[in-house]
Image (cartoon, rainbow, N blue to C red; front, side):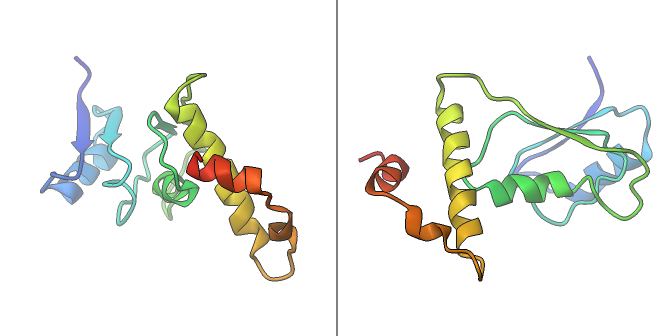
Length: 127
């Protein structure tokens, strides 16, 4: 029974929902699908970002979280990931960590990519 704003890939009123959330203290929750919330949103009234369903690419989650860290933000923002053990989501989290490690290793001046093993690659592709 809590009022909320809502946004997913089929929403036609993206910016109306953002304005409702940012401008109305009566709307404490904004439910946003990860991919729909990834670009073009400024959620300056958000205090918390909670990811319930992880995405394999950590940059997508980071971008969605960054929607709450915008010019005009007056509050400290807390970001959480909800992951249950022994689930596909836990495997996705491990994949994210590996992907981040690979991305970090190809930044100029880093040589860690050379340490990738066959086992690492097999885990990525579940061979």
